[in-house]
Length: 452
Image (cartoon, rainbow, N blue to C red; front, side, top):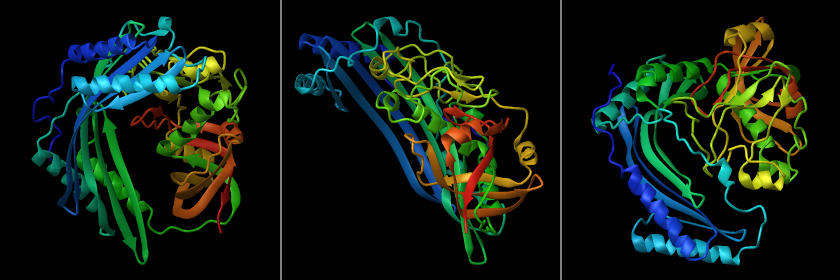
């Protein structure tokens, strides 16, 4: 088994100072054309992705992308334009286009830059940049080992959608006419595998992946593949369930979606449009008293960390739910003004949304549930943020006496998010750290299973 290691120097990017000079020049150009508020951002990304299927290289991609985005304001009239052309003539044309667009838009008193006093003045180093510039041969070998790890699990693993290795690095710089300028480099690396199992006439597919800022924090390719193979193998022999009401556990990687729906319901756009079931719920009980949900944007090396949001507003740790009570919304400067509030530094989304875990792992949650359904996959889109109605196709396992009995699929679970949130019994300590929402498995007291 090959060790995960770096084999080359980090990719060549322009110096941050060069990009800062570029965005300052863009802001000056827009101001000369009459803009009273200007925001400009530039990004450059590079990466390698390779997929091996059935031992053979199927795809090999190298990407190097760049982009420039510009937003201008003329007395609360907004115009935006973007380009990948960094030549002076292309930049001038982009600035002119943004200004021309603004002159034709309606005045919106809520439109404008975020307040100057909220700009980030200190940009901490969050340890987000760990380049892994692989040689092509090593990347292929690691992807091959990942797939082989899955195919070796059991002879019933008969086909593969491939093992994939991806590695990306980039730099971003943001500035505005308040005088704010910030920039930092990031990296993101992943290993994934998806395989197909067959038993009689039945075929099942499942996958697994690892993702990290630092390639040295990834599981080995064989471990990732083995997990994909085990997950696929365990799904063979599925049964249907009759319609019933039972406790439900959402596995950690699926539970993230539940809390993603919660964030959608407390986003500024949903609130000022009155299109959320949580309108006017600030200060009200929305979860059981033991639930604590908070943002941790300054965690080192975490996938959702950022020193400032996409408007340059400084991020900081804060509570969204404390003792089950809604403490704050998710707002950018525009939605905050619509609501008569202040931005929460969430332009572009939340940062490391964290749901504090309890003291049980997944087997402990299964024992606490006794009899019910463990959901390991959700299918389709069936969440109505306006009403809170929830209905999703799912696959998973039927549990009795705290032990998994057999896999199930072709069923759906249904409820209302109000009841589901208040019906949370426990959150597991098997926290999934691979993304921007950090949650363990979630046990819900009761939901409806729609089956045969």
